[in-house]
Length: 281
Image 1: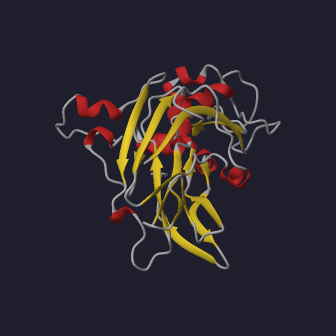
Image 2: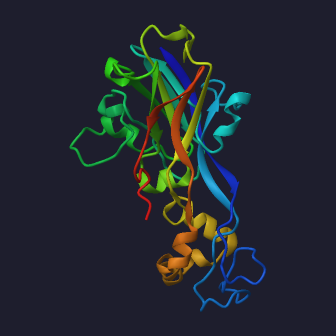
Image 3: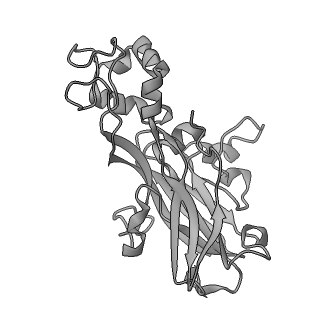
C-alpha cells in the first residue's frame, strides 16, 4: 500500500504575458487608470508574474511541514509530486485544499469507486458518493485508488508506465491553473523494495509536461488580472473585450510538455500524452 499527503497551494510563476503596446513593458496597456498603452482601451494585460495553483507534498497528514523535493526532482517545476505504486497496490492520498478555489484530485489509469473519482458530473449518485467532487478551501478529503494489472505496463512496455492526475472540479480552469502531476506505476515484482516502488532496472527518470496552458482559461485568471488592475474584475464588459482580443489570447498560451523517460544505459520513452489535454483555445 502506498500513502501520501498532498495539498493545493497558490504560487507565483515568473513569465512574460505582457501588453504589446505598454509603454514600460510592465504588463498594462490602456488600463482603467488611464496610464499606459495605445491599444484602443482593451484594458489591462496580465503581468509577467502569474499566480499558479499547484500540488505540494507534505511530510504527513498533519500538514505541518512541506516535504522537501529531492534534488533529482527539482526540475519538475510547477508539476505536482510524482505519485508511485506497484501493480497490486492500493494508493491512499490524504488531500487538503490550501488554495483559494475549490478543487479535486482525479487520477487517470487507476481504478476507483465513485466516492474516490474526484470528478463531478450529473450521474444520479448519492450525496455521500459526491463528497469527493468538491474540496472547498480549508477542507480535506482522503482518496483511495486501486492499481490493478491493467494500470501497469503492458507486454511490450518497459518496467513502468505513467498516468496523469489533475484537478477536476472545473477541469479546464484547474489544469490551466497548474493543478497537474504524474503517476508512475511499476510492474509487479519490479519495484526496488516494498517501501520504494521505483522500478529497480531504471537509473533515472524524467517527467516533462507536454501541453498548452491557457492563462485566459485558468482558475486564477481574474486573480492575475486584479494584480495588474484591482478594479478590472468589477467591469464585466472590459473582461469580455479582453478575452476577445486575439493578441491577448495568443499571449495567454504557455507551452510546457509532458512525457516520461526511463533512463538506464539508453533512453526509453515509455509514455506520451498527446493532444489538447487542457482544453486550451
